Length: 145
Image (tube, rainbow, N blue to C red; front, side, top):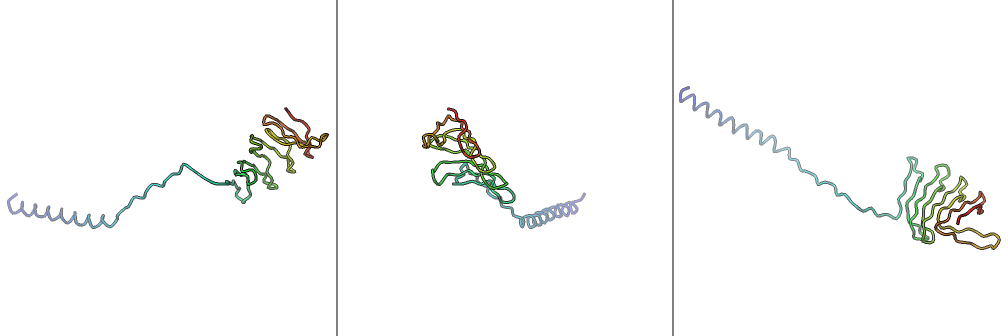
């Protein structure tokens, strides 16, 4: 290769490099990408009431604070009549589980509750450790202790 060919080849390489750099810079500079910030995750959820609803909009369960007692409760509802069938709450400062039948009558309580003492005609409070069964009329049929 003689000197003239060498200069032409070197000039062609330099021009090709410059043109390639300019063209690639023009093509790739138009596609600027800006990274989005990662979403912030929260470690706290605050609400006075959380409702679990079915696809039809009916309430299936509620976790809330009672407006009367200002105590928390969790209730599970029936799809058939929108009445709660099971509830866990705080009654008289102690935990309580209440189970109801299809008519909405309380049938079983585990924990603190109140029952009517028919012979005395007064309302009695049961201890947190009590298990109480009621008939379909809401009358006490068995309790321990």
